[in-house]
Structures are given as C-alpha cells and as structure tokens.
Image (cartoon, rainbow, N blue to C red; front, top):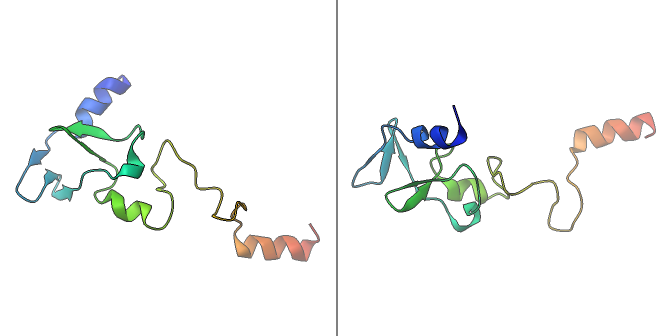
Length: 96
C-alpha cells in the first residue's frame, strides 16, 4: 500500500460530532502550530488532525512531541545534549 492510500485510510471511519472529530471512541483535537509540517497530520474537513495522538497540545507541553516527523528532541534549551543521569553516573564510574 502506498503512503497516499495509507493516509486516506488513517482516519477511515472518523466522523465529526459536536465535541470534535470522533475516531475509534476518542475525540481528536486539531493539531497545534508546532505540528505544522509533520507527515502524520491528516486533513479532515479543512482541519488537520493527528491520528497518533488525540491531544497534540499536551504532547508539545513538555518539549518536542515524540511522534513529530519534522523535529528532534536531542538538545535542551542551553544547547546541551540531554543525557540520562543514570547512564552518566555509570560511565563516570567506569572512567569514561
């Protein structure tokens, strides 16, 4: 199946309700500004929705969305690479 057909079928069975877009028993919210450019976003009734996560604003509230195809989460605000503190302590103990 090609990517174009996969996108068409990603929201197959979704319907617009008074609360929002209903898909598989979940209400999907429209994507936020940070999601623009993501390959996962699918247009439905002139609005873009993410079939991977129902509330895109919450995914972006703590940094970069892990589903985003257009952004990376490797660097924090100071420009340093994020390192797991447990792994860092083990490396220090080994002398690396």
